[in-house]
Length: 215
Image 1 (tube, one colour):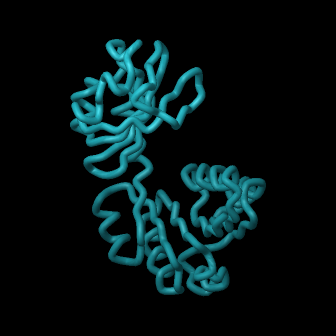
Image 2 (image 1 turned 120 degrees about the vertical axis):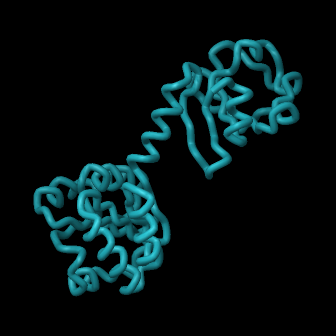
């Protein structure tokens, strides 16, 4: 369990708070708008109404005691930038800030952010890749070259074993797990035989995935 300071309770911040609650983390949530703070109360450990650009207010929260500080402010970049800078000045261990464009990310990183998230950009990439292929179910980008794909087992693999197909040698792709009847099987051996309806989780370079699965 981690302690997290979440600043900004718009749609993005609200979804973060709800997921962190589901994962049983301790969350202190901050926003200038009272209605947003009241709405998020069932999902957080504590919440306060306040201006994150006010150094005295931010200092009173003891930001250095949190494992992660997330700046989820989306419609006021100046506020996001100043909040990010203040958090670092006040001793925050890890600051994760939201950016909409690359130029914003550069300024945030220069002013104290340790990591940047691009919710719109990342979701747009996922949507484009997911829905441009009929047999791709999910996609997680690890970096510019590598990703994890959840794909339907190709028809030509049905009835054959992992050893017979030899996907690692042919395409330099690793099979991480098999999904069968909505259950995940993590033990995949050379003798594992593919059946109709199977999905697989595979790890590899994007170009190799595209070539192997015609994505």
